[in-house]
Length: 234
Ligand SMILES: *[C@@H]1O[C@H](CO)[C@@H](O)[C@H](O)[C@H]1NC(C)=O
Ligand SMILES: *[C@@H]1O[C@H](CO)[C@@H](O)[C@H](O)[C@H]1NC(C)=O
Image (tube, rainbow, N blue to C red):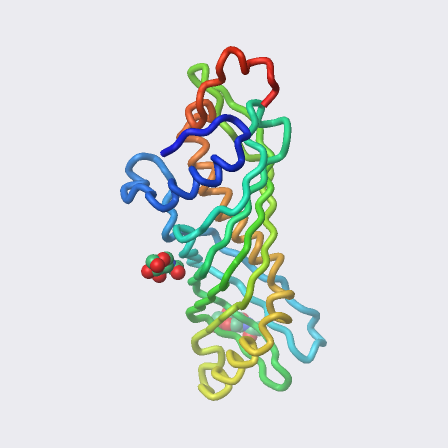
C-alpha cells in the first residue's frame, strides 16, 4: 500500500482505493474491521401520525450491510499533519449497498392494518456517500491515534429497491402489491426513512472506521514528515 504525505488528497484517494481492492481476507484476525458484511445494532423508523391514511412504522433487527467492499473513494480532504485542524471529508460511490434485516412492521395502508415480522431485503443502488468526520487524538506509545467524535453521512442514490416478505401474511396479493407500490414510489418512501437509514449507515461506518483508527496509528498511515517540511503546516 502506497503511503502518502499528510494532506495529499490525490495520493490518499489512490491509496485508499488500492487498500479497499486488496483488502485483507483475514481482516478480523489482524484486528481490522470487515468490509464485506457488517452487522449493525437495531434501528427503528419513527411512526407516522395515527390518523394518516397510510402509516408504516418499522423496527429493524439483525441488520447486515453488504457492499462496502465494492466502494470507490472519489474524494478525500483533511488528514493533515495536525488532523484536528480541518474536518475530514470522504466521498465514496457504492454500486450496490445491500441491507438485510428482520423487520417488525406495524402500519396501516388505507383499510388494511398490518403487524408483521419477517425478512427485509433492501438495495441502495449507485449510492454516493459523503462522510464528514470530526476527530480527537489519543496517544499510545508516543504515537497518535484518531478517535471519532462525530460522523455525519450524506447520501444520494439512483434507486432504492426494497422487498419485505409477508407484509400481509394472510394475503400474498396484498404483500406483492404493497412491495410494488414501495418500489414504484421509492422516492417518497426513501424521503420518509432516509434520516433513520442514514443513522444506521453512520453507525456502521463509525464502527468500521473506529476499529481501523484504533488499530493503525495515524503516524504509521503516512510518510514521515521531512525536516525541511516540518515547518510547513500540512
Ligand atoms: C461486490 O462486487 C463483487 C464483484 O463484482 C460482486 O460479486 C458482489 O456481488 C458485490 N457485492 C455487492 C453487495 O453488491
Ligand atoms: C403486534 O404483534 C405483536 C406480536 O404478535 C403483539 O405483541 C402486539 O400487541 C401487536 N400489536 C398490535 C398493535 O396489534
